[in-house]
Amino acid sequence: MEKPMTNGIKGTWLPIQASRSARNTINPIRRIVDRMKISPNPAKEMISLSIGDPTHYGNMLPPVEALEAIVEAVQLPTCHGYAPSFGTLDARRAVAQFWSRSNYIVKPEDVILTSGCSHALEMCVDGLADSGDNILLPRPGFSLYVTLCQSLGIEPRFYDLLPNEQWQANLSHLESLIDDRTRAVLINNPSNPCGAVYPEEHLRKLIDICERNHLPIIADEIYADMIFSGNQFHFLGILSENVPVLSCGGISKRFICPGWRVGWIVIHDRHNLFKDTIKPGLMDLSSRILGPNSVTQAAMSHILSETPDSYYDNILQQLQDNAEFVYNSLLEAPGLRPTMPQGAMYMLIAINPSTFLDIQDDKEFFTKLLCEESISCLPASVFGIDNFIRIVLTTPMEKTEEACRRILEFCHRHAKTIT
Image (cartoon, rainbow, N blue to C red; front, side):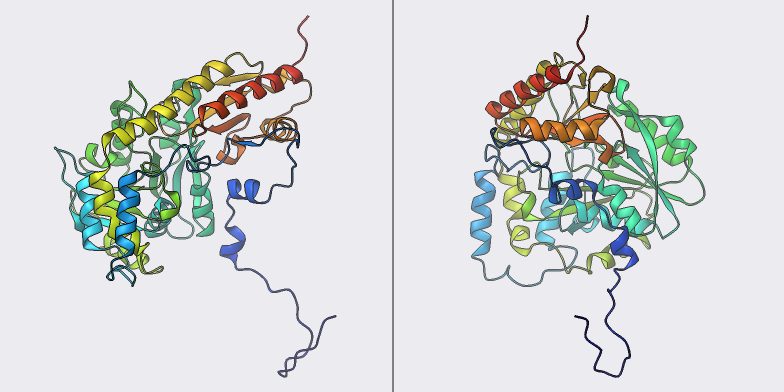
């Protein structure tokens, strides 16, 4: 029963409204996963191919060197208090050394530490654009980009990626979207959800468009160097001679520790276009949360410098083995057309609804696959493209094999009979 106010205000309590920012903050992936009401088939073990948490099944875990560094750091009396909001000097120096190459040296003062790569992306979007401005985003693309823009009143404009060209950007379409309120182009390489790794030539064409239009680049490079054999990764900031680049990265995926919450922004600004404006603005934005995890920062130098190449090689081999198995298996599935990824930890699979008796789109495929086969994937409509599904490639091989067997059976069961 509603009670009258007692402080002199007449009337009764009414529902308290959320802010515009809260109402506009919608993460499609989390809404599907966290609020999912669909019941899987109780007769079949659930196999999750939906969320990019590589630790889920325990076959991929942080390197021993990282675990040892965390244990040592947590015992230090100096790492339990507030650190500088943009990161400790030792941790920023470690990232600068880790990101540097023989032909390009990153300085610690050009590194800002963040609470994971998602926080780095949020700071870049917030630091470059105001409400009413627009930022160009890839489609399909990680749905958090849209969440961040809409929360801040920034218009997301989507440039198409081409499925028949290994998900490279449609360059003419991208450039056609630019107007006087465009503030940046976001480029994700290697890509989530596509698994694309762009060749140097394509990256240079993207940089040329940005140079012609005086637009900085937000580079989501969280999957940097997570590439399969036959491909090569290139940092946008190293390739760009004139266009300033904010490179977002972190330890979550490469070191299999998304819960440790340390990411970074590396500022590539050869002509000091950010020096007196964007850079101090990003440092001020970092003060909103008073810095990332202090214990993880204390361990950063050891994590980044002491993890052996054999650790990365093992993780990448698991991902590539899974990708090849899924790709070859689902080539045989009626109504599906997988695209072999070149890196990261995802695969997009096209769905042809006309092949099926009772499946109209990717959302219905997702729902029925979960209900009947206890396989969770993601409908790619959450990434901005219809009639694809995204699966994660971090499962143990035995679960990958079982998941593919069930998907094949599901597709044959729902396929139209060919006479």
